[in-house]
Structure formats: C-alpha cells, structure tokens
Image 1 (cartoon, rainbow, N blue to C red):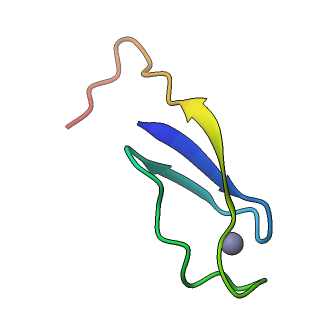
Image 2: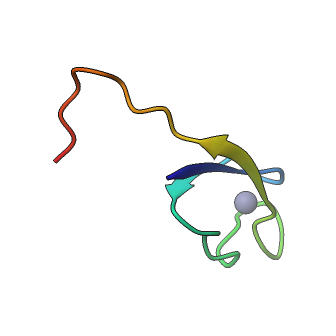
Length: 47
Ligand SMILES: [Zn+2]
C-alpha cells in the first residue's frame, strides 16, 4: 500500500498502484505524488 496525494486538490488516496487520474475537482486530472508506503500500526486488525 502506498499513499498518493494529489497536488491539485489535496486528495489522499491509498492504493497498491497509481490511482486513476480522472475526476479531480481542481484540475482536468489528478496529479498524484507517491508519499511512500503506508505504515501498518501494530495491534490494529485490518480486515
Ligand atoms: Zn486531484
């Protein structure tokens, strides 16, 4: 899992691969910046 942040609208998206660029409210398309891996918190059950 990686964190992707759109530099246009500030939307944060978590995905294994680059999310779709369509549907950005502030621009023609999202422009994702990969912020790196999501750190899984110990003791938190992910279902
Ligand atoms: Zn966007």
